[in-house]
View 1 (cartoon, rainbow, N blue to C red):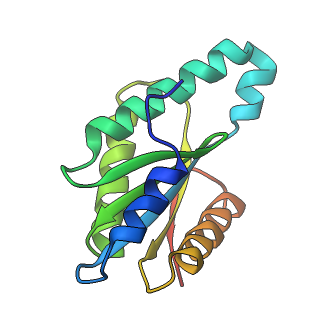
View 2: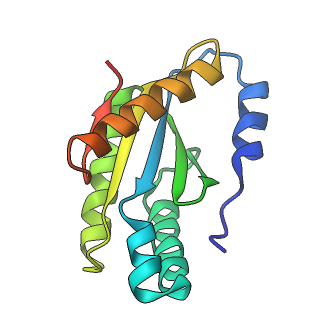
Length: 142
């Protein structure tokens, strides 16, 4: 549907990662996709997923990775610090705003550590904090 690899591609990348360079992950969740599906139909929800994935793929830097995490979630692997990742997310918001669709997204960012499972859990916790704080925002892990 989105043309993005799935979470297995990200896990494979981490299996090869030797930890010698800083990386961060960004979990992105399309806000209120269920409402889009309920009010406008599944085709409209699918179109929102395709549009978001297109903007994500166009906005990341060479070497960064975007994968479909599941449902309405995407995961970005960004080479650099969480601050670098936040700059990319801000660029994504600006690029997305040009589409004028009214669809927004929330994001959680975490720095990579030796255990990618915990890093993803931390990014997920930051994402849920962003959603609880009103959606359409980015939270860096505490």
